[in-house]
Image (cartoon, rainbow, N blue to C red; front, side, top):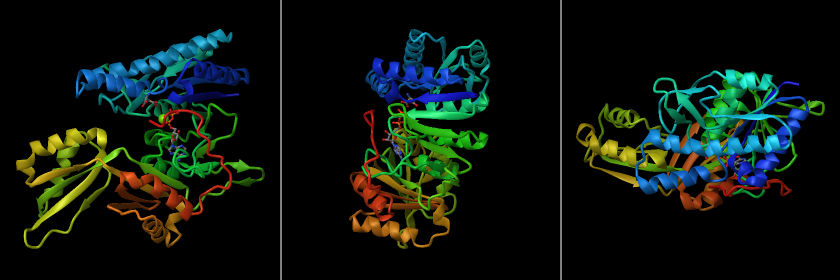
Length: 425
Ligand code: ADP
Ligand code: ASP
Ligand code: MG
């Protein structure tokens, strides 16, 4: 029996009852002969509540202090979980990210893990303990300040530890039974996926399926760590995310043509109006955005009006970066040369993902037909080899997701898409 890393999300440890339930699960794994490392998130919506609190005392809280505040959320759950396990008669020790050896760069609020040195975790396991680790946090190699990994970052902590400890599997416990063909909160007829490749999962995660964080899947693919996404509320098998299809009976699970539909309402759109249509303009706009350390998603440039020689460039970015991007562009207005900026945070993105797209003609046409039949207007389009994404009005998203899900034959006959907890926040 090898080492397993289990990660429990906020909804799984939302209250004392939840923590006791999770403690029992962890002890069960230990009794089955595994060495167990459990990574925990903050209880329920604690992280959101702490952010709200910070914004009440300062509209733009300093990154360093915000990280210090937010990491307190995971500290609460790790200590309570260790206590609950001890209460069941087993030994457990809790560790902060820094104590667990999660070393990051120094970009506050979205730090990247650059190394994991889990010496203390290894020692604790060898002494027979269950190790509990606070997710979502690390320590900067340069500044020695405490950092956080970005929202949902406990998933990344878990996979990074699983890689560093050479775990046999990384189990991600959450409030649904696995990865579904769409968010079960939006599509009641979503179907549970038994196995999905790293590639398709990466696209789903990047397109807004927050059941797994994009960076965590990237990490798992790089180190070839199989992930098992499952519910902490039921005993059901979940979804395996791995490089090779899993075996079911005497045959391998087949790769689906379309893996699923993802949606994302966390982005905003900025339109730079009246940009001179000459070489170097896009470069200086996006250099300004990059210098502000903002990641952008989609980009479109309109055809320029012949009379004026001016064009518009639109791009999407996380809403949380909207203010910073506008400020950076305004500051550089003279250098870039544009008339005005338009900011729109009432947008949503819908993406269809599946490796089978590469070889099946007509997928794009069917996707657009489904949207038009549902009366949904498309504002931006972007594609990759295995994904098509469109931007629409935010209000249209739920209807559009359901329409596309049905059009691609993904609806299940049974109501297997159970949501056990969480507020969906
Ligand atoms: P945790 O607190 O356990 O990290 P999250 O809220 O981050 O949980 O992720 C689980 C949620 O992800 C589910 O409750 C569900 O609403 C959402 N979700 C979005 N897309 C999917 C999908 N394709 N399959 C399953 N869940 C999804
Ligand atoms: N507590 C953090 C968040 O809410 C990290 C996580 O849950 O993964 O984003
Ligand atoms: Mg999560």
